[in-house]
Length: 211
Ligand SMILES: Nc1nc2c(ncn2[C@@H]2O[C@H](COP(=O)(O)OP(=O)(O)OP(=O)(O)O)[C@@H](O)[C@H]2O)c(=O)[nH]1
Ligand SMILES: C[C@H](OP(=O)(O)O)C(=O)O
Image (cartoon, rainbow, N blue to C red; front, side, top):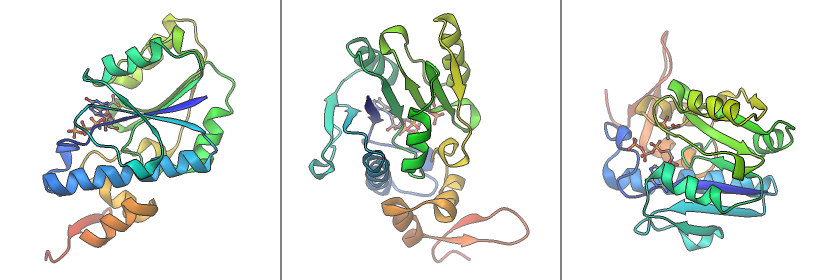
């Protein structure tokens, strides 16, 4: 089994721009990537491929295989799947709350495909036993796309229900979840930059120094 992490650093996470500058976002995605890689390693995933674009540096000390592709996300992943014959655990780089126990639970499932939905219709993790019999279609309601592709290919599916893994870090309000439930590099980074505003309503981030 292998893990595949699609990763884009350049102008990453544009939807976080109300909270973080371009430079901060590019620094932050690298820290989230580090947290994802460290949980995969703790789960004893031996082979980790980071699929990225040629101008997107993956830090050398991460000790992962770097796979380069100029293609967009779907094309790059599908090209990768076509030449792979081992089960593939595809996890997005913006899931810093993932823990080794989640990885172990998912890879021990017996179904052909395990899908972890992301909030708003996305797909945060997809574990594919036979990559030659599957292709991905991210963006839009990719969760529904991935269920339909599995059905069309005759694959059995398990939907893995997890708050931590369904929370991908897309928008400023997601950052508070890292403060509440995260760990590692990404939590340290968020805690250093934001305060948490609590009251009767949901907890929110407050830029440090804001009223
Ligand atoms: N290799 C590769 N990975 C990508 C690409 N676009 C996004 N990703 C990765 O795919 C995952 C999900 O992407 P998004 O949540 O849309 O991230 P993003 O494009 O940086 O964020 P926004 O600009 O806010 O849409 C993250 O792990 C990204 O790093 C791409 O063009 N190539
Ligand atoms: C790649 C995309 O991510 P989102 O835009 O939902 O974060 C998806 O999960 O289909």
